Image 1 (cartoon, rainbow, N blue to C red):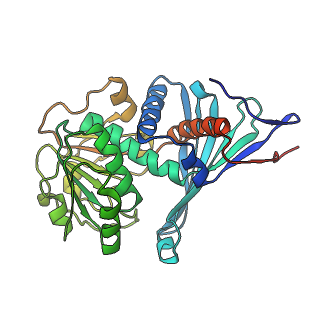
Image 2: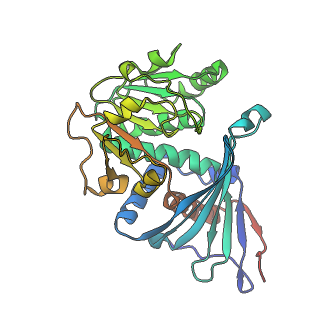
Image 3: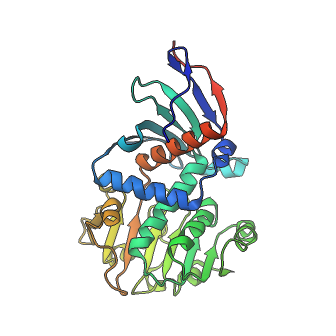
Length: 336
């Protein structure tokens, strides 16, 4: 079914969707994974366009990001404007905030503005899940999670959909209250056992899959020593862009994948010091142009940044559902 854009005279009205509105659209975790997967197919077919992410660094711990994209299949074009302020936690505010704006592909006028926090939370985890589908051992049973905030929760929700043999989750966070909240929140959603750990070392020992979801900082210090980790068969997804991981661990990976090679090179993370090269973009794995895990013993890492096409794809789906279900608030056009 195709949905038109509500008009105000010759101008398009703007649908405003809060985070609660976005949630009310009812996309499931499976829907988010499917949106990411189909977006990757469109990317590989050359049916999308993306502008490299731009960042404004206000200080060492705060930044704002802009990312734009276009998806031909959906006739969707727009951008995501987001901020990351880790010090907001002390003020009782979210570390992340932002909005997605979609524009009419025929005249460039905006027709929807929606909160992006929920979308980014789900999309980030869905990208990890799609990566794990191709790169983790199929029979992975033990998951380690360092940082049990929003991404710690969402990644478990998504990963158990693609790794059905998961039965043990080992968690660690510097905040004991966050650990207690995680156990209380996730115990009914996870079919296996959740075990709080007293140290990072205990958390990473003998895991099949490791997720690090801590703060992204400019000058990180190594907190996960390479000798603590399994030497064979691990899959690692550092959502905090290697903030905790020993360089030795990165350099001994048999394969490294990413969702955007351009971004990984722009951040001087293409490992020119003799380490493994990025062997594939995620879209190449999704369509079968590159083979992911080829043996039980391979050590593999997925360094994903988040790309605009997934946000635009998901936002268009949410807009269509919201119109059908009469969710949100209609605003007059910005321009006459």
